[in-house]
Length: 326
Image 1 (cartoon, one colour):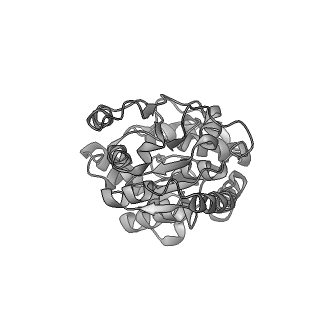
Image 2 (cartoon, rainbow, N blue to C red):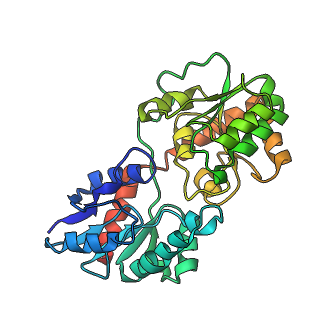
Image 3 (cartoon, rainbow, N blue to C red):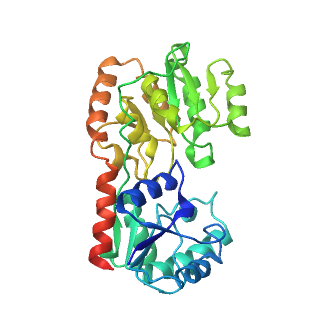
């Protein structure tokens, strides 16, 4: 009998990348489920979709378990950001986690997550048995490497990759960049489209000529963008993992990062850390962008650290957990 999975999560970034890499390596078979995941009706849709199959196991790469226990199943909670951050929390989201995710944990054979930080938060929040929640990590593709053409830009640049939601702390990055010695020597490149708040910060700090928005960067262009960067800066206040950290390290970009949540777990000794809620700490980190000895050390440590994150290993952990716990 096959192991079926929810293919609606497939994509090129974040959960979609996790879904694609794990399902392809494990040989999971897509299950046809109508609608979008994460609705209150979705657990019932999954149960109905499963009822037409003889199933060895059902795996979801995202936050959506089936209703009840129609078969042996597992699902993935990447983080509890929607509960932990007041600006993202809502009655509907809290209800989803309490009425769907928490019972799903109880009924699941195993629950996956991507960092030990998230694993401990899930256990603390749900009172799940510790051995039920398994950290499998994330990986990085082989085309993220120092070999290849770097991104072309007229001046040396510092890079931020991610969205511009409030917890990503991009506004504080703009303020700290404006106050640092780095603004003399570097541009700051931001992926995505400027939020209104970020655009206002750029204007207030008179950085229109130095801070550049890249729009939506195609996945195939990201390695080049990392290779050309003097450093990647990750100022986020909350990450369940943070794939850009590993991608940047794999391409040889030094990493300057927040010291919060899962970020130190992912980077280990291969990053220069700062307090994302302390402007002086952030400015002090950016002031070291011309410290060539530091950058060389971070580049070397990052390349070594990135080798620990392989999709083959992630898929093997998922497969083994399902085989031993279904």
